[in-house]
Length: 107
Image (cartoon, rainbow, N blue to C red; front, side, top):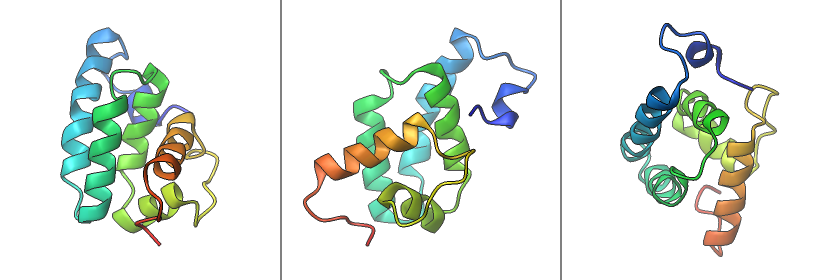
């Protein structure tokens, strides 16, 4: 589920564009308003940003457009994702959350 904004932007999704989006992930993670979400996303990005497939990097961008509460609810599994957000990267984030913390910090 490629985000339309990035899949149809003037800049093609070549290796250089994906490289820029990968680097942007860390900044996006750190700059969330909610401190718990920022910490979680920063740890996830630090661990996974180099191993994500190009489509996952694009899907991350789409998730980052959500507000903090909506994103936390999706990652925590509180809300069921709409088809556009039901992506491999969201599943990886959920798995990382489940594996990294004995208690869900978003509940």
